[in-house]
Structures are given as structure tokens and as C-alpha cells.
Length: 249
Image (cartoon, rainbow, N blue to C red; front, side):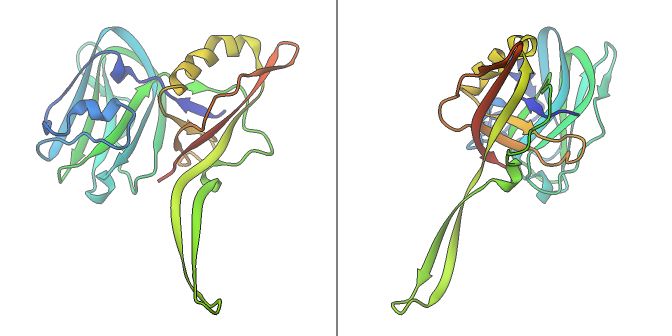
């Protein structure tokens, strides 16, 4: 399967209500794309986040990041309403850590959606997103850096007056990489690219570079500076290269 970008978020398109909510940490915090604020319920147990759309819309991916569910054995899943009852889009996920996750599933269309989170303690979560995934036409090419390997760290050494090594501090600044599109068809670019770029100019997004071989290696990322325009690289094809920075844990 080709790389996947998760940026469309149906939660931004309808009415959202949580079955329990701490007034200081409202449910809106879960879909504002910020990792600096969180949604927290007022109690523990099973918490539903319900979305009501004015018309049926489609989803085939679910992503989340910035939570502490892993500290409390919490689970999370997405459901859609089939006209009579809520149905799981996939089996509930029990995160083992705070790495970003993007899960794909068979495309469903509904006006009612539900995120179900079950936890034995009051949890917090910063980012939830689901909608139609953007799947690239081709894989990432030789010469690119997988996001997990693009560690952006600042190293500060401590030395004595005589030059003795006293220790080192590591300041983590996430990861840096490049989103490369090589020989993307003109038709694909015109159908999908500008819509994605309009989102990326303002908000972060999820990237899953290799869903087949490394389904857990998702990155929550945003563009790093200005977004370069694509170039016509051949008759009927375009190439684009976007610097990104983000978080993998």
C-alpha cells in the first residue's frame, strides 16, 4: 500500500458532543489539531464522542495522538451508525505508548459517528481525526529519510576546564523529514493536492509512509516553513517536495 496522509477530519464538519466533559478541557480540544490542549472527561469508564453530520460523509482512516491512555490500559475505537445501531469500524486499539497512530478500515458512509474511549482513570487526549485518507500514487523514493530516523536533536556537552567530558544533555525537537512526491499524475494532483495544501498551510496532519511493512511508524507533522510549489517534471506528471517537522512519540 502506498503512503497515506490523514488530514480530513469529519469532526470539524458537524456537531460534536461528549458523554462526559471537564469544562476546563472541552471536547473541542480533541479536534483543533493542537497538541498544547486536551480533551478530558469529568469521569472515567466508557466515554463517547458523538458526531452528527447534516448529510452522510465517508471515512476510511482514524488517527490519534497526544494522550495518556497507555498509562491506564485505555482503549479507543471508531463506530458508524448503519441506520439502526452503531457498528465498529475496527477492533478497539489498546495503545502501548504515545506514538501517533493511523488505522485504515473499509470505507463507510454515515451521518452519525462515535469515538468510544474506555479507561479506568480520567484520561486526556489532544488530537483525534478521521475521514477519507489521501493515498499517494507511489511510494517514497530512495534518498528520502523515514521520519523516525530524522531525529532533530540539540546536543549540549559539559566539559571541565581541562577538557574532561562531564556529560551531555539532549534536547529533543521532534523529527524532520521531507514529503516527496515523484511523478504524480496531473490528474491526481488536480484532484487531491491543492485541497491538501490548503489544509497543510494552516494545520498539522498525519503521515503513514509504509502502511504495509511498518504500520506503526506514523508521524504527526506539519510543514517546515513555506510550502514549495510542485513542478512539471514530465509530460503529464508533477513532482513536489515539502519539508516537514513533527513528532513520533
